[in-house]
Image (cartoon, rainbow, N blue to C red; front, side, top):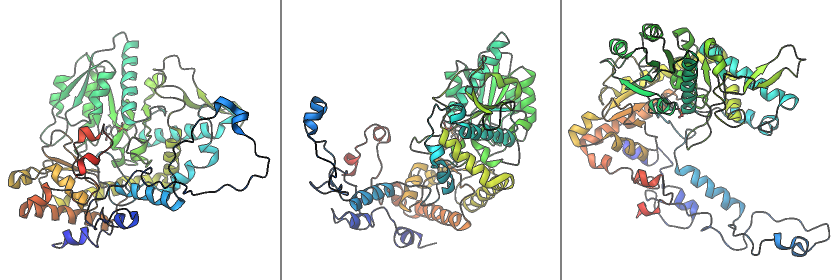
Length: 522
Ligand SMILES: *Cc1c(COP(=O)(O)O)cnc(C)c1O
């Protein structure tokens, strides 16, 4: 791979950020490796140009001003004027400016950016599903409610939980619902308790959900093998412990092998055990959280069950519970009354006096649930198990290829992801995890998650997912090796990256608030 740089950036990639865009745009003469910013659609506008012309009127023309008077706007709206291909090319260029999973591997650890099968979109676009009113009930929505009910049952079967509410719109929202259920449960027993224990490898949403639910988050340190230190847990648990939140496999990609012991410690003190189920991709069809002893969990339908996510798009974070907590689930819950005639037996159940209440409008993000349902049914039980097996296989394959070239603080077999460290590169040549992430963009690949989990210095958290082929994994590994070599031999290439993307390094705090990024480019 000594030629990786040239090959990947030139012919091999074929869509280096600048190439093609300059030519297709026709407005600037930028060469293949120069950055090109796409003009706004208003800047592309030419007066009088249009994509469609209406046929001549076949009814008498009326004077709208006379008919509608003051309701009529005084000046025509300032809409951009372009031909249809100009519009299509503009949006296609915009779409290509960012990385997406339809283009190449997206190994963003913890986020499970797997390929989303297009059949999910076809199913979600069916007029009977896409067009149903969000508050439709009873005979007008039997199919939709049946789908939600059946999806809930499938999630129970997959997880070993007894009941599910599909209301929460994201994983973090599922966590908050879970923590409110913890509070409702303990309050019913006379004391809500005050503390929730969270391992130091947890996702940041965990302590945030704990705090929002009015609890104090108590952090416990991981052991040297990256797992929960059971003695530290035992010392931290007491009769003020409302719950312990656990991610399994955890964010280091390590399975908590002592999970039964952990659960017993917490239950013995009267606490509940919560599973952050964002990493369910690693254990689908292999291990069920309900069998491991968890009381509550959330699912990320947009991770494990392949609904597209990112960019703030809609998600779904159903919360599942064991029977003793079912009455606290957020409502409405899709339910079935088998005494009713067929075709009328499904309903949304609001009659849940102990419920923590609503956590989202309508029934949650319905079409995300539809995509997850299509995904589960197209794969079936054996297919779901193979998802987990291949996710773990792919991660271990990649870990093996990369481990000699980067530090691997928590070694051994991993689950669906693993965490490298760029500490060696930083020490040798000042190249950081951030630099490596930026350099990957120059090769047309998405960066892994960086600087998380917090307990790994210069962390590069890599989750290839099961949908990557061996060739795709090899290519990612080749590029990572090329970057490791560049870091030694010509670190300025890495610290100066990216050079081929539409914009270079942004002031990230400012870029999130000021969407006009042109200031950065020159
Ligand atoms: C993604 C993730 C979450 C939060 O889920 P969102 O759907 O992004 O709110 C929580 N925990 C872990 C481990 C995650 O990976």
